[in-house]
Image (cartoon, rainbow, N blue to C red; front, side, top):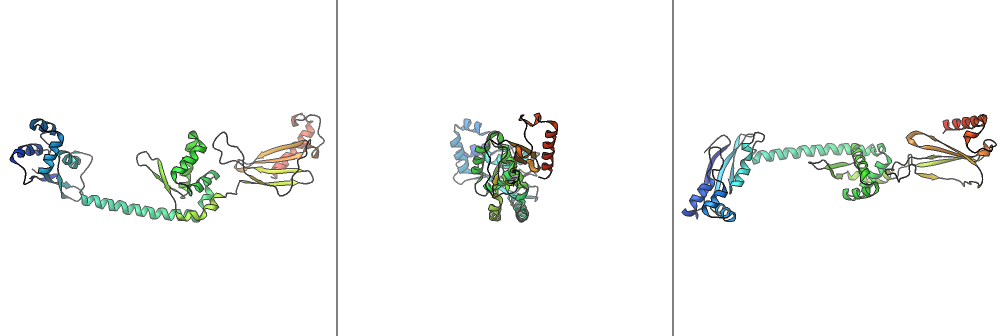
Length: 326
């Protein structure tokens, strides 16, 4: 039997095949014009009083169905052998489908080689991008939280990283961890590996060269250290409250950071202090603290809203001018 998809179908029998088994084997392998089996194994087992194990053993030890399948890609025929109906149906399943075509082993190998070449080319291009990102210090484009995450990524594997941030952020905020990883990837500092079926992150890679800059990534000084200014004449103290970029849960502080006092500061007990704060770039706050007596003689009322208008306006002008100069 021949057609444009399957050709030269032959049943090969072993030399030890008995005449008694010949009828069973011939019935088992008989195909119709569409290359489908005329008799199901279930009927053969019933007719010859065999179980599935006995039937499989008899067929595999005494016969082989050989045939050639046409490959549309290279327009050639490839030889195939089957030891069971199931194996034959598996190998020829694409021939009965309108959506798939058979490819011979030669064509599959060529396709695999082409995919490998494309992947190697992509890896070379990615390496160039990652090299450039490191040379340009792209971690400076990240938030402090992302920089800390990148630093931890250089010390932990992905499972350790997930466990560490999962315990800190909690399940409701875990998406923050994922988005941060994606932002780091956009800067070509990490390459995220994903599942093909659900696109979930399963691992990550980075250039070994990045490890040379780990300390530079970790120790972030911009927007993290507050400088303190002290006016010795008025005893006024001014310093910056830096936003806590690591805040991801309600229990985390809104502002945190480092502050360095270059000299001794004394807050006198029983002295009334006036304080105010201004919001500036990056959501940082600037705080000033000054003894009220060094501004004006205080009235008996404590809140500023209860001061005389002239005094209140004077204090307000002082704060406004001070805010402009921060």
